[in-house]
Image 1 (tube, helix red, strand yellow):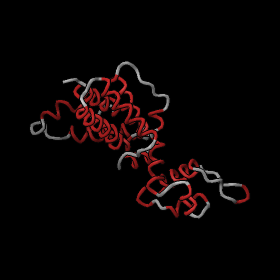
Image 2 (image 1 turned 135 degrees about the vertical axis):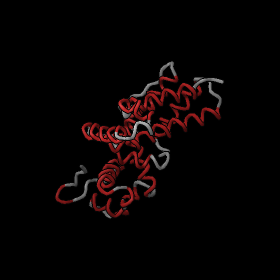
Image 3 (image 1 turned 180 degrees about the horizontal axis):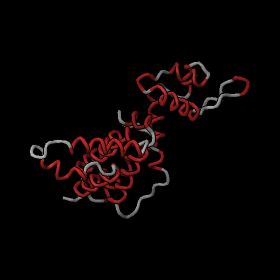
Image 4 (image 1 turned 90 degrees about the vertical axis):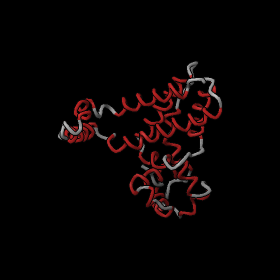
Amino acid sequence: MVASGREGRPAKLTRDTICRAAQEVLAASGAADFSMRALGEKLGVDPTAVYRHFADKDELMREVGDRALAPATRDFTTTDDPRADARRMCIGLRGALLKNQVGLTITSRGPTRQRNELRITEILLDAFLRAGIEPRRSALGYHALIEYSVGSAALDAPLSRSAQVRRDTYKRWKDDYRSLPADEFPAIHAFVDDLYPSSDEVFEVGLDALLSQLMRPQ
């Protein structure tokens, strides 16, 4: 929680306190209903005070989103295996966003163009460069990996909070498939017991398939 100052005075404004307060407001109200007025009330200041630290609302939102990416870049070091580096980064990116719905919402709208996002971009493009992939294919491959990782997080986020809810939901879905007429849906009946495995497993299978093609020199 963002702490207020003593005797009812607002805490000293910094980019950090503003971003933490914005995160709390966004988590409570959602991005669609977020306003600088609500943020000012949370901080106990006039909303215009925020503009001494951020040029506009867009810059603030992008920094809040970028902070959600920090777990993916923190302590990340590259190795002599570019494909493994790209794989590790994509897994870390998805994992970071699954833990931060606010960050996922913001970053799904576009790149933050700030420190953590730039670091992720640099790591992935460098991996393609070291793998010997030509520039056009590298750029396409980079975007494919980002869209797959962020998109997977967006699809899996609703069921990521509770393992029990996820298991119950998957069981309900599988029961619905199992109840279908076998003569009309024979393939579904053949595979129904194996449908809806771990979302992490599904992501990694797809990621490995992508990487095997995207990082194959032609």
